[in-house]
Image (cartoon, rainbow, N blue to C red; front, side, top):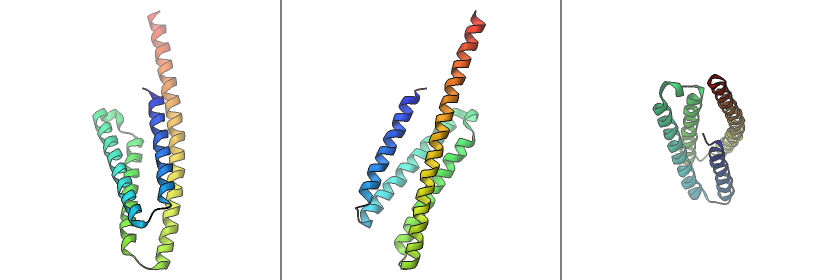
Length: 143
């Protein structure tokens, strides 16, 4: 597996996210809604691709990671629902409370991403070690 390519893709997604967040800070709510709709579409597509890969891989792909992906997709749908509801609400106090909750969710999502990157690092190192061990064991058997 080409881990560097996967990590490059992850890095690009982080850079794209940073650029999107910076641009969003100066946009009106109509433009933000478009940006949110696009982000939701991207998350839905990524979740569907992950589900398809897991189904193609069969039983061996069923793991805690599949549940993590499903949970992440559900969280994204929940956030989209909150955005839609927020667009219908007017009360300033509720809006402030909702904003604080959304900010907390954003911070938690970033913390989760940091944890996910750490787990990815550990999993990649484990996979590299497992491959090295398997290759070494095959050489011992061959000699």
